[in-house]
Length: 208
Image (cartoon, rainbow, N blue to C red; front, side, top):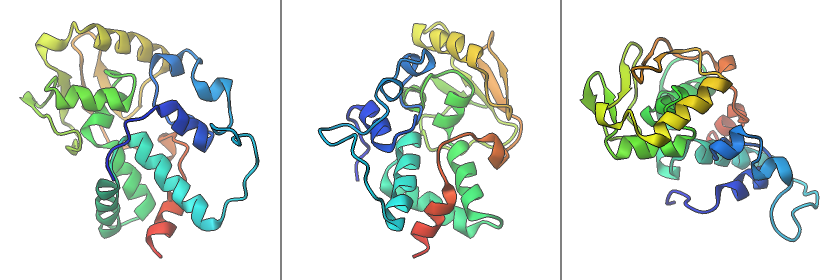
């Protein structure tokens, strides 16, 4: 399945929760889910009974859309999470959160994960002083993630830093907004990652 490139606010309305797919509109409380908290379409306001399988599938789809990854990428991440020791669901969230595009988002250099992925793809991001243009790159604890010098005055990046500094940043990253870099100081605890996803249902889905 190719990465979704359609109107993202319809996706949020379909699931009935904010997936942080919009930037300034979301931070300003003007996203579509705030104005129309029901599914899109003619029958969007009807209540639908969802099966157990449907609930499990919805959780997987929410995570996929939120982190902007394909079905194949998601399955590969799940398999890696399952191989690791510990709770598979928690491992999965950790793997998703330590992707480079997500770290750029968590550090406040992008208002959305999609923009974070774009910054990485276009070579605006350095890891330990070296350019990395792979969004799925796994950032390790202690690594320094920064915006390259020529891009630090990019209006979109400057605006993102202004907006995200007002809403609070992840506690597992240490940021220097003046020099536009951050360090992943530790892996996040599951309860710190506030996302509308029940990873337990994803594990159940893939365990069938």
